Length: 157
Image (tube, rainbow, N blue to C red; front, side, top):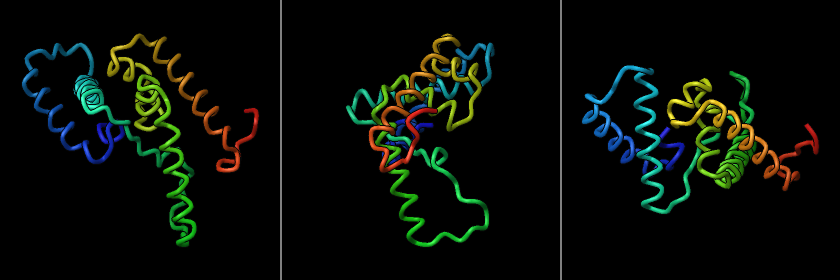
């Protein structure tokens, strides 16, 4: 999650900082929710603090949003290059989303968290998570449609 929010260059530092914070705050864990959600909340907050402190654009690896090749299929170098270019264009488009929308999109659609887990990690009401996710998806579709040559998306879904 840290890599997807701050990029590969800063992910190790953010992860280490988050685990140190979690270790020092183990006594504050109440056990109300899942331990995983509690740790990911710390990772999220640490990543957002790092983004704010460094004033960098978060980076998301969005390979899962780009069509995956079937297992066992041989990809030519041209196919590999086109796939990498599509991922890079998609990553650039996702970086245009506001951080709150980007976070719920990554947690729900890429990491596969349930709505309740996303709400726990982001400390946001469930309805707000659903609303942000809807707006994030709608905004991403709008952004992608601005250059239909790259994506070939229909004008209406």
